[in-house]
Image 1 (spheres, helix red, strand yellow):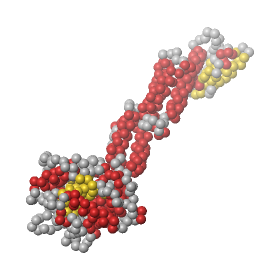
Image 2 (cartoon, helix red, strand yellow):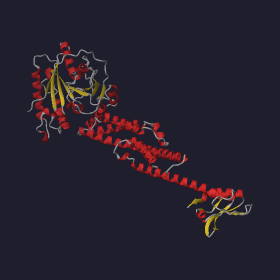
Image 3 (cartoon, rainbow, N blue to C red):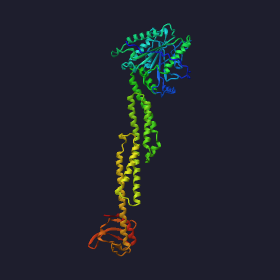
Length: 570
């Protein structure tokens, strides 16, 4: 048999600081074995909902009317009801919880064993032991000195129950007992000093070992020792009335061990974040009440799924409420400066909130739910990202065309040398696109395809402007030739003019070289109803296309303007 892990009192000096005002107690389990609601709100009222793992849970066991509630009130500053000395009847019914003063400790006062009210009903005793072991880090076993060595009086029947249900809960844990264990703190009341504490301690250890050896264990746990699951600590308190000064001093010493956390080990903690304690305990009690096997890892995973979903939903709601003004402007086609930084900040805040509250829970569940949250955040941001890209693209094209137009308006713009404005437009888009990226290297935030579309659009703008300038030049040249019919001889052309009278016709003719440069398709002028058609005339020995205009001189001028839209140079 291995030597028990015995933690002795540390002999710390008394604490002289006064206790704060009373903290209200909350009934967890009713006398009729029902779990009461609103524990979550109560934990919030106690100021522990954001404590994370920075809290501890302690429970007390003992026979009825042994002063359990009085002990808790003295050590932890709680306000549990205590027994009326005259009536001598049960005061704690079910399980109650209260926050300790000056420390992040939740204290559970468990209904006393061997109560007259319960009679032969031992079911609640076993269920409360199972519930407390699944929740608490330290079990305080409260007993009188004269009860040590007595089976019932020393709560040995209860201890046997505790050991048995502990095997059911933690029987498959690793051999390293430091990783997960529970402290059994025996507080021996009304210690007179005739029997040294060491002797009382040895008696209790020997008795517990006999109980451990007597309980039925699965074959794979036959070689497991009591100390694989429990640490043991012992403390004696003198009589509260007849040795009041010593009693108060020792109580302050014990209290200090809880305040400075020297009594706690990391392995005692059940690793349930404070904001999940209420839901965890409720589910544990439901399993206990249904007499189902209590699989704590499964319960912890289920708790994690529920809490991570709640935390994720809260983070997503906060995320969706951000940037309403900017989102509206993006949809209307406006480029928002620094919009990528805004989106990254929104996303980061949502994930930080989730990580802060959910990372304390079951790691696989936390990571899986985090990935789901990332997908939902990105699904919201992706359309905004693409809209920003399109807005930048449109803005770049407008600016690019305006720059080319300015060059054309002052004359001398060379379309064969447009590399500088092209490069400037592309660089501006790339800068805006990179700023809008949420996560570098993630395919969700790629913008290369939009860049290629921009380059095609830039080329289309250039082609259109070229065509427009060519068309303008052709219109100018065509109008000049046609209006020359009624303006007299054109130097170097040698025009032949017919009679220019109303209803008569005028024929424009020129040299073969000039005639070949002009082609006129059929056109109509709505303003003058003048017919214009391509005809062939002879100039010298060469036949060439020419223009015939029917009408007066004024009509001819109007026809020239109408025909201009259909004339182009070959």
